[in-house]
Amino acid sequence: MSGTMERCAPPAPALLTLALLAAASPGDLEADGGWHTDHSKQMVGKGPCNVEVKDSLTYSEFIHRYAYSKPVIIRGITQNEQFRALCSKQSLLQEFGNRLVRLSTANTYSYQKVDVPFKEYVEHMMKPQSLDSLGSGVGTGVPFHWHGAGYSEVIYGRKRWFLYPPGKMPEFHPNRTTLSWMFDTYPHLSEVDKPMECTIHPGEVLYFPDRWWHATLNIDTSVFISTFLG
Image 1 (cartoon, rainbow, N blue to C red):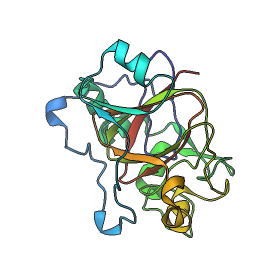
Image 2 (cartoon, rainbow, N blue to C red; image 1 turned 60 degrees about the horizontal axis):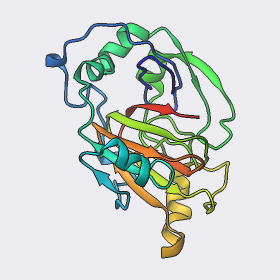
Image 3 (tube, rainbow, N blue to C red; image 1 turned 30 degrees about the vertical axis):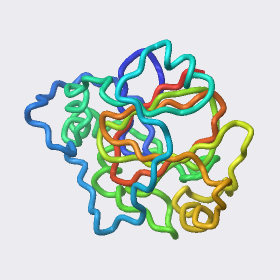
């Protein structure tokens, strides 16, 4: 998602640009915003983290150390309780339940696009992903790809990231999900071939530079916002 307005991405893989106009009270907000995750069905954990994490970062430090060279996770730079309230399950269903969202397969090329009402997706289709099914809830993600630099912030849930620099193309099949890559390829990677990785939590912002390969995996039912710079 990108643009000049604040936007909230519904749980992947549903894609819908949401101009959040509804009013909600942060005081009434559940810790997970109503996006409950059944952890008994969780297939993948949060894993290790070898991406630098900064609790504060000056503009000069960001430009010289990260903007053009490597990813970084920044904490404590957002005050977004009102925005989080607008992204709660109740608020999104109330405001956008009848809007169409576009679903697609969880692979690099996003085949088999189909439009369904957001409420139908959330209430009837969103469930944990398995290795023999298309992604529809927890365990979804985007396989390896690259584009311009960007930021991603998790509003609810947790999102695991895997990153490689531009000159090091990862080993992956474009028609396989990130979840299948985790089970079929990831365990067999040598130390030198392993990605940079980390799981980001609510309130954390991941920055990745231009042309960096990256893939994502939703550890929980997640709501996130992404801004692409090019």
